[in-house]
Image (tube, rainbow, N blue to C red; front, top):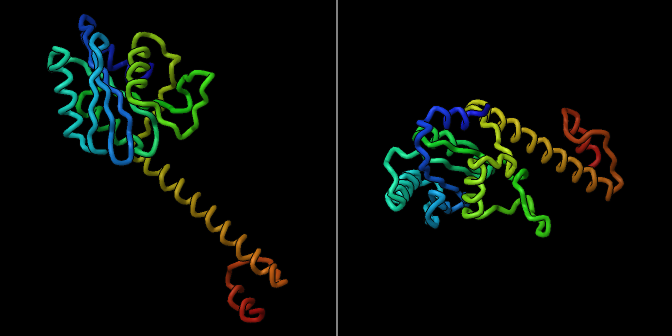
Length: 200
C-alpha cells in the first residue's frame, strides 16, 4: 500500500467532501485547477514557486465550494524539472500529493503525445478525481525519493552529462586532427602536451 492510500485511510471515513487540485508546472508560472467533483472547477495562475499563493488559491477554492477549512486536499503534478521539493512542501501542509509518471498517463490513441508535452491542469484534475474514484490505471504514481537520494541522483546525472560532453569534445578534436592527417592514440593525458608540441 502506498503512502497516499495510508494517509487517506487515516482520515475520518465519514468525510466524503474533498478538494482536488492539479498543478500544471511551467518555468515561469504554475496553472492550478481546483474542484470538489461537484461544481465546475476554478482555475488560477501563480508565479512558479509561489507557495503562499498556492495556499491562498486552496483557501479560496474551499470557500467557493463551501468546504470546511479542514477538508482533505488531494493534489497532483507530473514528474519533471521541478523534482520533488513541491511534493515535500505539500506534505508538510497536510496535503496528500501524487507525483505522476508522465509516460504512464493514458492518452487517446488517435492523438499521439510527445514525451515533452504537458497535460493541462483541467485534464490532470479530471484524472486525479478518477484515480481516487478507483480508476488506478489512469496513471502510475512515481516513487518519491528522500531529499538526500534526490541530491545523489542529481550529482550522478551531472557527472554523466559531463562525461558525455568530454567524450564529444575528444571526438571533435580527433576529427579535426584527422583533417590534417594527424592521428593520436589518446587525446589528453600527461603526454598530450609533448605530442602536440611535436606535431603542431
